[in-house]
Image (cartoon, rainbow, N blue to C red):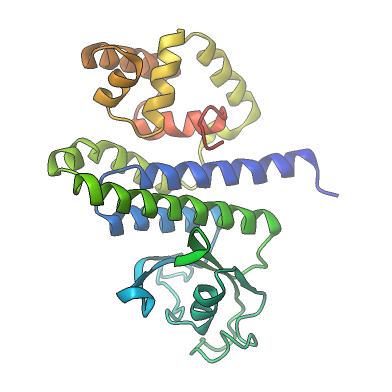
Length: 283
């Protein structure tokens, strides 16, 4: 039977993966860059061999690879070859349902690919759904059996990505693309997410440190807590001000107080702290 510490660890992994994915998708960077942040997050947090995102194009006739991230696995830091194309993708799109294979080499929809000798790989692909129609695929390869909790994380992540794609398409129809100036203003968040992904472990995950974080959080005023929640959710200072009915200058002041009281040295630290304290909307 799994002990409580193990279950808590699995929950932390799921929450951290969702947080990094949502933060990456919330930026105004080009779509491929946002998707790349998602695939890197999933490779990191789910210990995947590779993660890829595909979108349907040409009226549903083709699939276009949007992002692909692979783990470094060899002593020299090289990436092992994992085939990109897959008949399994067509099955996921046609049926609008997930496809999971525990052994890619012998699986009927994956065995025909050119796998390196001795490959041991599991696969899970989830459709990005718009109503009941698949508009893309989130696919993961793993060198270890894919646990149920990881499959659930992939399913919910696919839902988040699909929702973002649908929302962006709707916004572009009525308002046009996000301005270049807003892209620049969100660069700090993009860098923060990359910083979180780059860290293999974060020392604040220890129970004693979590208690310290909780004590620091009690020192925040109600307004500072509101500002913190919106900031780690990806909102700009102006957007935070509009939501709370305060000026951008006041938001900056509250944000500075939050960083000081929580002893966060970057936005990446603040995002991770919010995830560990389960303060975020996606926790």
